[in-house]
Length: 479
Image (cartoon, rainbow, N blue to C red; front, side, top):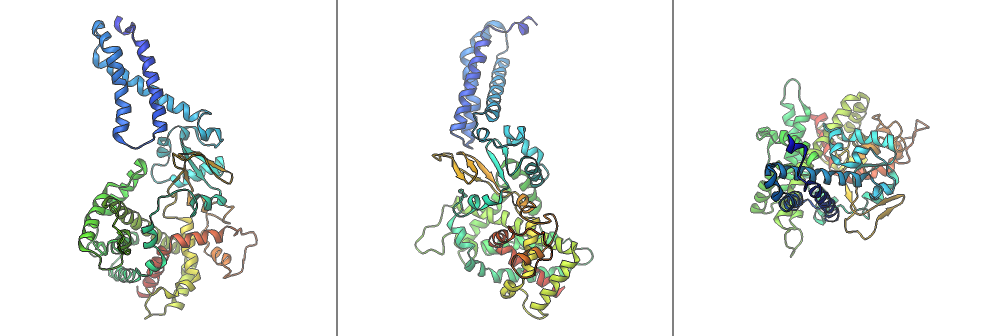
């Protein structure tokens, strides 16, 4: 007991050295921010071990204190000092986002861990909406993270000349209008297959499950030219269960589901070995459309394959399922769309021919309204100001220091009453009024932002619109 109440005299100097080491390591973390595991392990494990060896190991021998206890104490003190330094800095006026006056919850400003805890269970978009209602259009949701609700900043942040997003030119070629037209026959085959499968079902049909299978089979065809037959064989590998679990893990860890690595590697290797039989998306990702151009590294192809399969199938499935949810919950909208489908596609016509879709204004309105209420990526991905940027980026009233992550959550923007009247209501007619296809019936309906969002949704969800339109036409005409 006497030993515990009278620790070695060298401990005061040891704790001082540990605290100074923690402060120095914090500055290194700030300057060389990286996700390198060896780098993190070195800075977290080596400094306290060196301090223990130089300052305490010899003193411990004469006091009888267990060496293991001394080492554990060093690590505990060092970790606590490092955490304290990080938290104090992030809350202090020395932090750039604090100096700029961006508001936000105190716990969010200290660590993204609190944000992850509050949004556990898939409620991130609702939490962000509540934060914006409380703090305003620009909210600090993390140590170096901002969420933006200001509509005038959407273009400067997400537009062509906005913040870097790392998009590949190959993706742009593979999703260009000419390339999308080349996927029509793939879509037609899979839509007809889904309609036939649904027609064979008896009793209650879980539509979402079959749309998941359809989306995955279609994306396999579109990306790799084949490789999946879930509509025929079912989810024999529990892919969707694992993708859903992987999405949850990805949210917390900030990385792609590990399952996608296996799926992407398998299909990528198979696609490279078999070569190009059609102009699928991989045809563009592998630079097969560019004569004399070397293919990208296999690691990049693997990443692209994972992204296309996991993100593409999940978002397409989510968008299509949401459309049918909204239609089934609003019989008047369902009847209006049914009338338009019957007018453009009488029985016997090819319902997968997309030539009439540009004239089907109510179909476009229904899909846009669904994507407004239930965007497949409700919180979007972040854009980041490069760490080595020479100066802060200024976008109107928004000042972004180097290293700042910026989110523009579609769910929050789409449900802002300044952008859309009756923001929580399913009202497809708002898009018809904005496009001039019907006169406004509600004088106070604010539609000034609708046209902008309509163009944005149409540009980013052209494939989802084509898929949903063809699928609805096929199902309503054949089932």
